[in-house]
Image 1 (cartoon, rainbow, N blue to C red):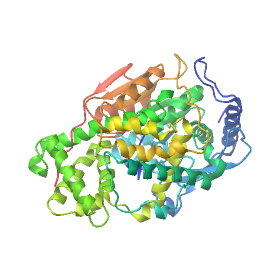
Image 2 (image 1 turned 30 degrees about the vertical axis):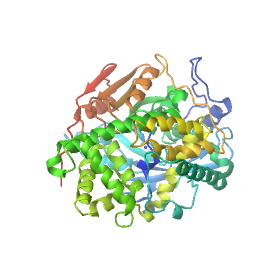
Image 3 (image 1 turned 90 degrees about the vertical axis):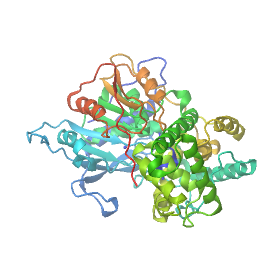
Image 4 (image 1 turned 45 degrees about the horizontal axis):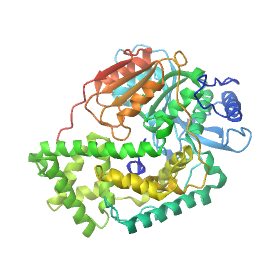
Length: 520
């Protein structure tokens, strides 16, 4: 799961249904509709060819489209097209040059909601991915609503970026009223622009789309790598289609407990961001000789507050105010490889050079359409998926309390999600994600103990719910998304699982990857 601010991866006619009595099964009409669509996709396949210039992919990557029902209860009704990308397996071990047998397609969803996975096949040329790219076709796609896949929009992109903006940690009653009115207007815009189609942009439909994609690729069982929100799609898939799972990696897992989808998960995320923000400040303090921002985490926070106050009075370059600063710094809470650049930008600004901060934090008009599309899909999926409080007083109570101890991200997270309080489409009851003993082949969960975007308790909950799963933990680390990253131990488990089906018992742990080196 990612906040929108951080954002601006041959079917049988009979589908397996969950066997556990506590599980909420999919409506029979939707299960039947998925079977119909998957059988049709298995027959049609995907006509892969050259990618268009707009997709900005190298010649080695092929593109095509996949036809899926907008509404799985009406599989022969309105259809939408999802864009798909693929690089074929090289068939050659990169170290020895020996022939490697093809193991099928490895499908990726990188998270979001609202993020495209079309670029995933490009990873095949990265050293850490070459062994996987030898055995697998690497397949990415843009989920429904994203990019060119039946794109959603809730507002005119020209109005999406409105220039430097404030970001109070403890907003006044007037600010809350203004933001609530803005959220309600955005929710109305979603309904006005999409009509009745809006209700069909959901996580269960994303999981059904994944099964149709599996069939179109000619795979009887799915090999899947889901990151962040992609883990929730994978968890729903494993619950709805357990007999269709071959291998499945959950990288930085969302907590799938129905009562946590999505309001309470966002509260937990805001609390975790405070801890990760403290990790960043402690690292900066250890390198006071480089950045001069303070030799304690408290002093670094004070330096950051000075920057915020100055930007509130005079936006940097006329473009970067406190809200843009916060968006840039939030990336440091996601990925520690951003720490040196963010620290340098703060340091340079306080020394009179706003250039690095403007470069890292300014909003680009040419990216507004993509950013608005990301936000529209993010909200459509999360607001449709589950009940949300419809009384702002509940949001105000919960987040005022939380902001006392976690001010860094709390209210910005509220403004991101608040349209769900006024959402015009019907809300679903979240599926009870679960797989009993023997229902699934071994699955692999990767998690960092201090991940803020998807706090570690989500990995523990998913591990508990999926019998036979293995949890690999990166200790004392917090970067979001571990697969193919800088931790050799994690990558060794990932590669052994995807290439050989091997898992390291029920649980394993890896030492943290090295902290980044300070740079100027």
